[in-house]
Image (cartoon, rainbow, N blue to C red; front, side, top):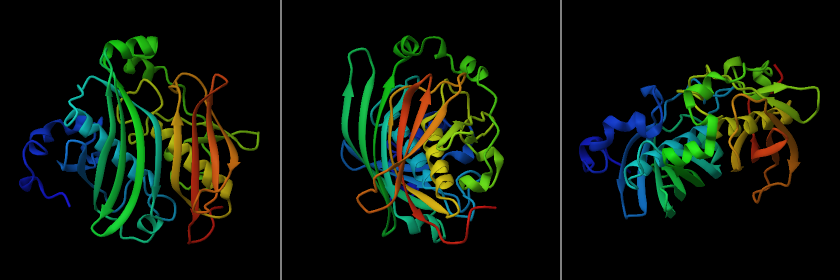
Length: 317
């Protein structure tokens, strides 16, 4: 396990603490999950995160914990390692290319929620391009003491400002793009998508079966802690999770595995749709569905989500 700050070499922990909000791209200190890290080898590192007993966003209807808290922890951990271990400048813009993750269901449903989780991260590839972009691939295995929590594989790319401006054009200015965001569409009923509050719903119903409109509420301070120039990948994963719950009604389910590919940026100033279709069961026999994010008639992201049943009643309220 990663030890406390006093026991961790300054090169791994103490020297970087003041910059944690910048590293993890979070303004609200309460949303920073990373608490420490150490290096085992040049490619292998252990990052410790601390989870709250309950979270304003990641606690679901019925008090289960969303496995996307695990994904957000990984996002933060990789961001920290990018800027420290791999010396990627803070002005680089990071974006996911793919995310594959799976968790052990009882950790998120049987309480108490683990408070300290160690994530062993092995970087399987770090490719630096001539003009400054860096492509990274990593494998993550997470434990809480002797309890296995889950695993993931993530690929992402970082771009320096000049390349990002060329890539994003008029969308490169995050503040301006954020101000052009469309108002949120009407929300689906929270309990139908596994949620408690309207503010946490990212789906809007349509008249077409298997189709939702992506509901982007930029006042949600967890999903949008600061201005973004596009819709974050976490929102697409959340949309897939909520769609999986809606499709499972009246049963309650937990989204325990994600296999996502992000092919284009999702813009804030254009409507976006989520198309749902059944998919083959995963290798563990768990049911899956496919959630395609569609904008401007193009599939911009695709997520396969597997679920397991949750005890504790129906989700039709």
